[in-house]
Length: 182
Image (cartoon, rainbow, N blue to C red):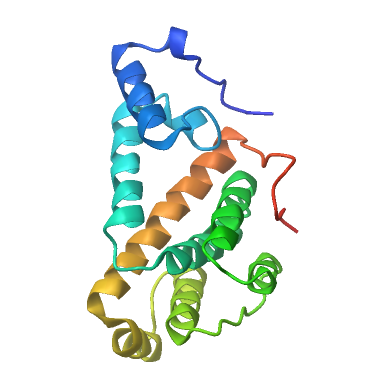
């Protein structure tokens, strides 16, 4: 059950309704998960949607790498709804179910692709320490390059915010989630 009351479209002010309608038109979803909270702050919701759109379509991370970073991040924050959503999208992007469940168990996940492994390892160090040590930074810079490293930091930040909003809102995973938090 949601802790923040679900704001129904008919109760929204003009700005909330505009962002709700745009979000629904672009994503097909606008009333669950972290959107429960974002509906109350339409400017924040719109900015959040802009970062999500960038990550999905313009970032240098592959779809699988985006989901790996998201999964590591939302798992760190024990965020039920985003975990389920990212697990579904990660599996669809080709992430091995064993890797998804290793991340769920907060264990070291293994990836056949070296870049995917680097994304996982960098995301994990970021969420655990809030930065990269000199060795982690050197490895990330060499393996991923500056642009992908910057996109990865942005992804971790975006999904930290998403996880926290979902947690505060009290958003729970749907019953048909392919993976549920342990």
